[in-house]
Length: 289
Image (cartoon, rainbow, N blue to C red; front, side):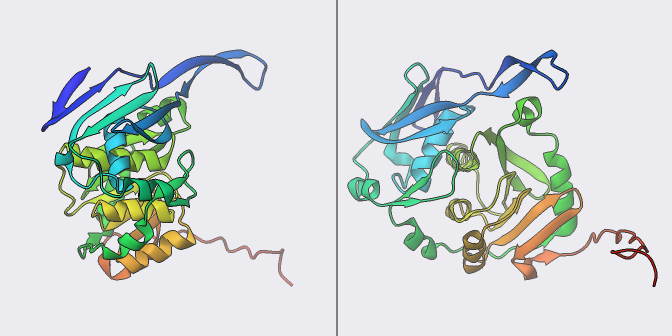
């Protein structure tokens, strides 16, 4: 399939997201279940090999574009001529107008991260992130609850096969874009690319993920210009330090009517405080004296 987004030529063959396999259940009986597909995708920038990502492959052009953007290889959409994905050879070829500046230096400077399946960040992103300026936000608790409820309509691959993370760009209680992949870092890179390709403005946006909020995730969201992160999972110490330094509002362990706010305390308006849970009158450790 070949399409065009703005001036960029996009080309890829389709890839199955899940496949059916036979397993044995706890009774020793055969069952057919679906599992998530995982495939390597090697990115070439002007015929130079950059990295191999393990991915579900649901939106490969956006993944490639977002990865190169977040790693600092590409700074403008106008510099790209074409992105061609060929699953037969498990490769994505990106062609630009000119050689990206400092590509050799970026390839040599790597920071090992906790991202499952990706594992490195190029260049001096930790230094550059201090230049990011994010807008102040005001967020209502009721909006967070409504958004969490609406997100339940997504996660199709996860519901069908499990083994994937979901990430979303949201505005208020609405989901603007949603992506699933075998790694949360792939999903956030795909959303970064999709924001570029579809010209999605970052103002008044929130970022949601089913995965943990590490330093890598916070850096990528900050590069996208988004000041609010919301996770169903937990946070790491460095992820929290970066969120506080950048003025990001960080909510985690978010599910149903529960969340923990780790940063940006002044930005949240508590307008839908749940009724306190009934507490058992029985004391821990036994009966009365």
